[in-house]
Length: 406
Image (cartoon, rainbow, N blue to C red; front, side, top):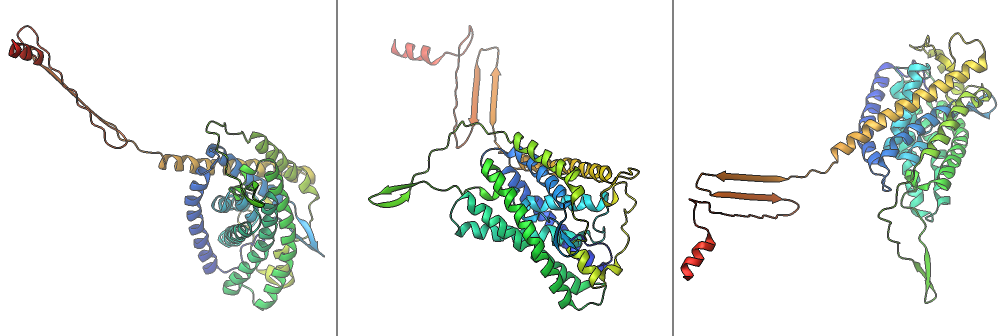
């Protein structure tokens, strides 16, 4: 689905770029809340997990799978990212992947980056997460429902992305092709690709939910309530009191397993991926759109076309490129999300005002006055005054009372 430069004219490409930039700006603000809003108290662990999701999407996108005669497809990743880490953070995950692919691997044009962000990042996350939330609302509150909703959401998000590309092509396509033919071909092949996307998404989400449901953004608050039978009727059992001092469980094993899996997929399994053109490439070739494709601005990149320059062995070259891509993506993604997490933590830090005033006055006559005022939550004021008498000092209250009594 990576559109090259030349498919869409410059004015509409610029407009799509502005739309994508606005969506990223909104996502940056929303991602701060998602990264800092882990109800389990693990906000500091969310940034590396989001970076891992980006790296996993990069790796799986290298695995083109056959969907029809002479056509292949690959994961888009919007649904998977949105369900695992939230829609705003998910949008940024896919955006990081698309940016690195365009700059380092010459995959997807630079002037078409806004188009690709709009179709592959914005559309997929918005459509998938909206449908996912609607489904988990009406389905039983269970882990199986999360998996089923993930499958359906991912399936629908792919042809939705194809429809958005078709709309952009209708408005600014550089080839005179009947839009009906483009729409039919794009949606038809991407429904098949959507089945593969749905299977990958459901398997991944289901695996994580089975082991660590607390790490799945879309599964929060969906725990099945226990039932009690009272007078022959089933009623919800009361929620147990949360353990106040329960330590947060470390997600390091999940993170390590995910990273190793991503490296294996990109470094080894990708060699066996289908070499057939993906859905957009196939449609573009069949309808003469591919003739307008322009050479990529970074076609001479050392990692162009997912291979390492000067490495003659094809398997080794592709594997090294995949490993480098996973490494760069996880570092870049984690860095971006860590900065967002820290910035949100700084912005949201509670402010406290402590006012303390101390005044001390002493003279040779021996009179001293000390006043202390402290203000905390609410209003609390305490004033203490003491006067003492030295050799030539002022009489104290006790001396005055004694004299009056005498």
